[in-house]
Image 1 (tube, rainbow, N blue to C red):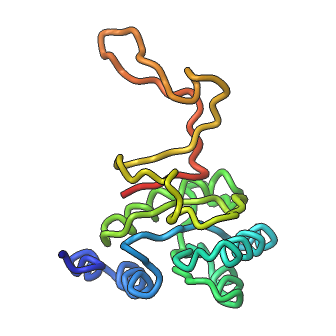
Image 2 (tube, helix red, strand yellow):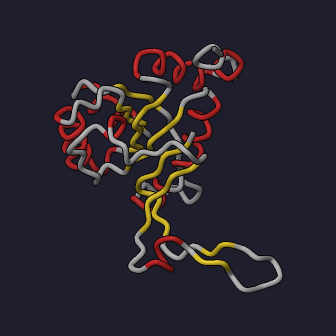
Length: 177
């Protein structure tokens, strides 16, 4: 098969070289569970890492947005990728940080790695990579906060564009490959 991680992506810059070195250790079957975090949520990150360890998720990766988070995560024995990204407005709250996930996802995918991206407030009771509920049959599998069939699964918008409308997608948990 193809080399993993992708050598052309790994050569792009210092960040990609660091990510590729980490993926050689952390990825199982070219997949990781990744959580983006900063120093504002150490208590939640600690609980997340305990859950991952208890669920035997050995391919969990913390994407640390600052040095303090990297030190915290490494102190807990976590695979850690330091990626110092800052939201446009400079905010470090959870909503601003959430928007940074997509730049991180691009890097993992460029390296040839599939990602189950999880917020740190998700508690893992079982290893999701061993469950039949992770289908791996689409480019993106997402979570919804829908409360009925229309908001959970979407509906065709009756217009000339024939587009699918999604009412309640949640970026707190999704799989991309």
